[in-house]
Image (cartoon, one colour):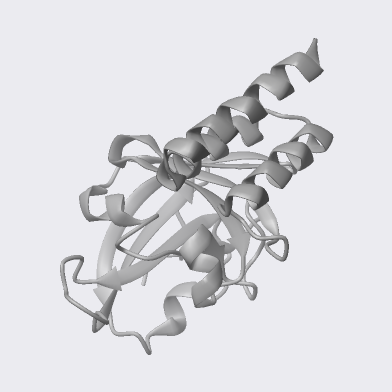
Amino acid sequence: MGWIRTAGVIAGIAACALVGGGAVAEIAPHVTADLAPERAAEVRRVLEDVGTVGPADVLLGTIEIPRVGVSAPILEGVDDVTIRRGVGHFPETPLPTRRGNVALAAHRTTHFRGLRDVRPGDEVALRTVGGDRTYVVERTWVVDPHEVWVIEPTVDDVLTLVTCFPFDHPGTAPQRFVVRARARGAPPGTAEP
């Protein structure tokens, strides 16, 4: 029965690809998070075929912030090619669902467009083969691009999301918008600046 579901999912993704790549980007994270690793590999091949992820991309999982409409694959790295395809993971930070300051970045005009409306209390779900974790947004702030302390290690179990700011700035934006969320159930600590 599982292969029938997988075949249907893959067919659905391929059909959406005919409508437009944006639909694939919205649907793909939902379906791959629910599949066994071997089935997820089949879906990944379809995503590669339609250009949502590339063969060199390291797919770590998915991120969802339902209230603001964020839903995207998490890929390893934060180079421009990677964050055009999904949300990038800063390699120097812990992998998603590990303890510490997990830091992710994406473009303000694509995958992190919804961050403009994020607010304290919003839930952020990370889904990976290694497990799922829910974070709760605590605060947001704006920093200059050279202020990389926002992704430095913490003893707290937190998630840091980074995108360019202002959201409506034409061209290269001069600042960065930062979202800090704490793992559900984690006690407050020293993660705040």
